[in-house]
Image (cartoon, protein in one colour):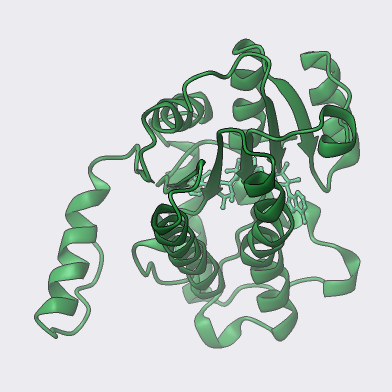
Length: 259
Ligand SMILES: NC(=O)c1ccc[n+]([C@@H]2O[C@H](COP(=O)([O-])OP(=O)(O)OC[C@H]3O[C@@H](n4cnc5c(N)ncnc54)[C@H](O)[C@@H]3O)[C@@H](O)[C@H]2O)c1
């Protein structure tokens, strides 16, 4: 999809970080924005800055051209220390939201007979298995394989709907404060064990020191959509670790610990 001007973009998790950067970029491209987030207050502020009201897409605009399934949360615990509620929250936001997005939007995107594109935000955690992030890793691996499956099915049908999957490594956003949006029904996460706290400290630092910004992610997404490119991996150094993991699998070696 090369033309963005006057097209409609739907973005989940648009009140902060990568979603907000996608919204800003969409506004700069002259797109009509449809923004969703669990944090209504923050979203209203963001939408005010961008001078757009969050709206229902099909009802108001008739068609959707770019869907960014981006909302996500992170949690650090050892695999066996995640409570069932932890799993349900993380998988619910990170994976089920994409499942719902695909289920509800795809039939309409196919029916509208206009060019469109779906971008699912996964993560480096969808390509690697970083310790301390079991639920997050499972959710993001799910998003990668769902996106790959969708791509292959749409390609076989010669559909006018493109698909991409965004796999960032560390980006300075509010992801390390995800518990701020944890709904009450999931209760409060138990304090992390000492081992998990060490992983948490490492990932918090990595997020804060992330060299590429949310705006860089938005640039990478819009470039990939224009080029109909599926994999969006802005942190190129990540590929060494991905290759090592793939070699482990192909050669049936035990998983090599990440550096
Ligand atoms: N920041 C990173 O280092 C990084 C790396 C890889 C992948 N990601 C992914 O990028 C995406 C965006 O995260 P971010 O880094 O911008 O974090 P962020 O916390 O700054 O933004 C995430 C947004 O999602 C919203 N959200 C949370 N639960 C929601 C729900 N149930 N419904 C709707 N919105 C909800 C939050 O309110 C927030 O506005 C996520 O999918 C995340 O997993 C981030």
